Length: 150
Image 1 (spheres, helix red, strand yellow):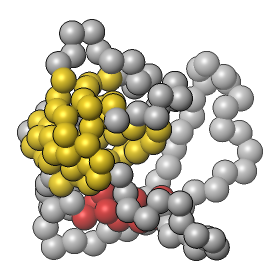
Image 2 (cartoon, one colour):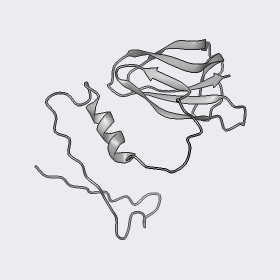
Image 3 (spheres, one colour):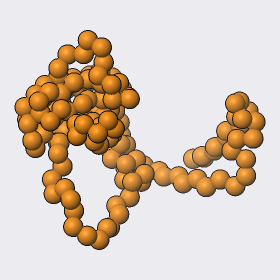
Image 4 (cartoon, helix red, strand yellow):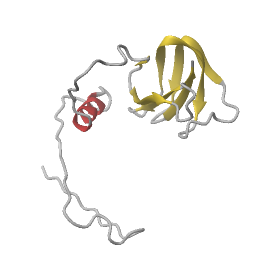
Protein backbone atom coordinates (compact mmCIF):
# COMPACT_ATOMS: atom_id res chain seq x y z
CA UNK A 1 0.00 0.00 0.00
CA UNK A 2 1.45 3.34 -1.04
CA UNK A 3 0.13 6.88 -1.05
CA UNK A 4 1.61 9.67 -3.10
CA UNK A 5 0.75 13.26 -3.78
CA UNK A 6 2.11 15.00 -6.82
CA UNK A 7 0.72 18.31 -7.92
CA UNK A 8 2.79 20.57 -10.12
CA UNK A 9 0.59 23.31 -11.58
CA UNK A 10 2.15 26.10 -13.58
CA UNK A 11 -0.98 27.82 -14.85
CA UNK A 12 -2.35 30.34 -14.04
CA UNK A 13 0.27 30.97 -11.32
CA UNK A 14 3.72 29.42 -11.81
CA UNK A 15 4.47 30.06 -8.11
CA UNK A 16 1.38 28.23 -6.78
CA UNK A 17 1.73 25.69 -3.98
CA UNK A 18 5.36 26.52 -3.23
CA UNK A 19 6.79 26.17 0.23
CA UNK A 20 5.77 24.06 3.18
CA UNK A 21 2.37 22.34 2.94
CA UNK A 22 0.37 20.48 5.59
CA UNK A 23 -1.52 17.37 4.51
CA UNK A 24 -3.70 15.00 6.46
CA UNK A 25 -4.40 11.47 5.25
CA UNK A 26 -7.05 9.03 6.38
CA UNK A 27 -7.67 5.40 5.54
CA UNK A 28 -11.14 3.86 5.52
CA UNK A 29 -11.27 0.08 5.74
CA UNK A 30 -14.69 -1.35 4.93
CA UNK A 31 -16.35 -4.68 4.27
CA UNK A 32 -18.24 -3.59 1.21
CA UNK A 33 -18.78 -0.63 -1.04
CA UNK A 34 -18.15 2.55 0.99
CA UNK A 35 -19.99 4.63 -1.59
CA UNK A 36 -23.07 2.41 -1.71
CA UNK A 37 -23.43 2.11 2.06
CA UNK A 38 -22.77 5.81 2.70
CA UNK A 39 -19.79 5.27 4.99
CA UNK A 40 -17.42 7.26 2.75
CA UNK A 41 -19.46 10.48 3.07
CA UNK A 42 -19.98 10.02 6.82
CA UNK A 43 -16.27 9.47 7.48
CA UNK A 44 -15.21 12.33 5.19
CA UNK A 45 -17.60 14.69 7.00
CA UNK A 46 -16.38 13.46 10.39
CA UNK A 47 -12.75 14.15 9.46
CA UNK A 48 -13.39 17.46 7.69
CA UNK A 49 -15.74 18.82 10.36
CA UNK A 50 -14.77 17.48 13.78
CA UNK A 51 -17.14 18.23 16.66
CA UNK A 52 -16.62 21.56 18.39
CA UNK A 53 -17.73 22.26 21.92
CA UNK A 54 -19.05 25.77 22.41
CA UNK A 55 -20.25 27.49 25.55
CA UNK A 56 -23.58 29.25 25.74
CA UNK A 57 -27.21 28.63 24.95
CA UNK A 58 -28.08 27.44 21.44
CA UNK A 59 -30.23 29.86 19.48
CA UNK A 60 -31.82 27.07 17.43
CA UNK A 61 -33.05 24.08 19.40
CA UNK A 62 -34.09 21.95 16.42
CA UNK A 63 -32.91 22.10 12.82
CA UNK A 64 -35.33 23.98 10.55
CA UNK A 65 -35.27 21.16 7.97
CA UNK A 66 -34.75 17.41 7.95
CA UNK A 67 -33.61 15.51 4.85
CA UNK A 68 -34.28 11.78 4.57
CA UNK A 69 -32.79 10.08 1.54
CA UNK A 70 -30.47 7.16 0.93
CA UNK A 71 -27.46 8.27 -1.09
CA UNK A 72 -27.77 12.03 -0.74
CA UNK A 73 -27.08 14.63 1.90
CA UNK A 74 -27.53 18.27 2.83
CA UNK A 75 -24.24 20.01 2.05
CA UNK A 76 -25.43 23.50 3.06
CA UNK A 77 -28.26 24.99 5.07
CA UNK A 78 -28.25 28.75 5.50
CA UNK A 79 -30.27 31.94 5.28
CA UNK A 80 -30.48 33.49 1.81
CA UNK A 81 -27.87 36.16 1.10
CA UNK A 82 -30.53 38.68 0.01
CA UNK A 83 -31.83 39.16 3.57
CA UNK A 84 -35.27 37.74 2.73
CA UNK A 85 -35.25 35.24 5.63
CA UNK A 86 -35.66 32.43 3.06
CA UNK A 87 -33.71 29.25 3.73
CA UNK A 88 -31.24 27.90 1.18
CA UNK A 89 -30.86 24.12 1.18
CA UNK A 90 -28.14 22.56 -0.96
CA UNK A 91 -28.51 18.83 -1.62
CA UNK A 92 -25.91 16.50 -3.09
CA UNK A 93 -26.46 13.01 -4.53
CA UNK A 94 -23.41 11.00 -3.46
CA UNK A 95 -23.71 7.50 -4.91
CA UNK A 96 -24.04 8.08 -8.63
CA UNK A 97 -27.64 6.93 -8.95
CA UNK A 98 -31.11 8.37 -9.03
CA UNK A 99 -32.75 8.82 -5.67
CA UNK A 100 -35.70 10.50 -4.09
CA UNK A 101 -35.88 12.05 -0.66
CA UNK A 102 -38.21 13.78 1.71
CA UNK A 103 -37.54 17.33 2.89
CA UNK A 104 -39.46 18.13 6.09
CA UNK A 105 -39.65 21.66 7.48
CA UNK A 106 -40.39 22.53 11.10
CA UNK A 107 -42.34 25.59 9.87
CA UNK A 108 -44.57 25.47 6.77
CA UNK A 109 -42.99 26.81 3.58
CA UNK A 110 -44.90 29.10 1.24
CA UNK A 111 -42.99 27.49 -1.63
CA UNK A 112 -39.83 25.55 -2.38
CA UNK A 113 -38.20 26.44 -5.68
CA UNK A 114 -35.04 25.38 -7.57
CA UNK A 115 -32.23 27.96 -7.67
CA UNK A 116 -28.78 28.27 -9.10
CA UNK A 117 -25.69 28.32 -6.89
CA UNK A 118 -26.08 32.10 -6.49
CA UNK A 119 -29.56 31.57 -5.00
CA UNK A 120 -31.37 33.02 -8.03
CA UNK A 121 -34.53 31.09 -8.98
CA UNK A 122 -34.00 29.18 -12.22
CA UNK A 123 -35.94 30.59 -15.17
CA UNK A 124 -39.07 28.57 -15.67
CA UNK A 125 -38.40 26.61 -12.48
CA UNK A 126 -41.48 24.93 -11.14
CA UNK A 127 -42.38 25.09 -7.48
CA UNK A 128 -41.01 21.89 -5.98
CA UNK A 129 -43.25 21.92 -2.94
CA UNK A 130 -44.89 23.85 -0.12
CA UNK A 131 -46.17 23.18 3.38
CA UNK A 132 -44.10 21.05 5.71
CA UNK A 133 -43.14 18.13 3.40
CA UNK A 134 -41.76 17.90 -0.12
CA UNK A 135 -40.51 14.97 -2.18
CA UNK A 136 -37.33 15.85 -4.06
CA UNK A 137 -35.89 13.75 -6.90
CA UNK A 138 -32.14 13.71 -7.49
CA UNK A 139 -30.14 12.66 -10.57
CA UNK A 140 -26.74 10.93 -10.31
CA UNK A 141 -24.19 13.22 -8.59
CA UNK A 142 -26.60 16.15 -8.86
CA UNK A 143 -26.08 19.21 -6.68
CA UNK A 144 -29.45 20.87 -6.18
CA UNK A 145 -30.02 24.24 -4.53
CA UNK A 146 -33.49 24.94 -3.15
CA UNK A 147 -34.95 28.20 -1.84
CA UNK A 148 -37.50 27.65 0.93
CA UNK A 149 -39.75 30.71 1.11
CA UNK A 150 -41.28 31.04 4.58
